[in-house]
Image 1 (cartoon, rainbow, N blue to C red):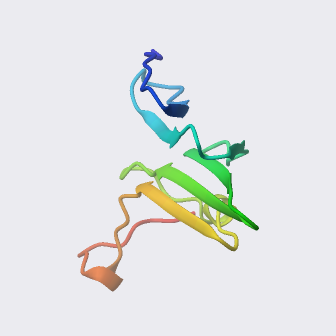
Image 2: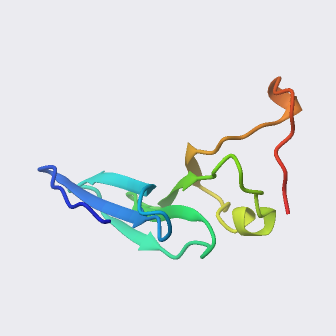
Length: 106
């Protein structure tokens, strides 16, 4: 169920979970920031926006990767481009940073 709310001075961009009725991702963007929502991979809980800077752009992606779901590396790689910031609840498990297990990927 999509609950609506309003925070003065901010735009809300959201991607509600289609199954299960709870969850999803949301971004609050200050109204003074010039941004455009971008398309994202269909099978990923994700929001991506492009922010207009003085003479360039910055892309910001907010991602939720559930811990019980394999990561589709091809879909994830589509989000990476020059001048991109990736944020979110990524549940990233890797032996590189001390996790006893490795996240599965497809």
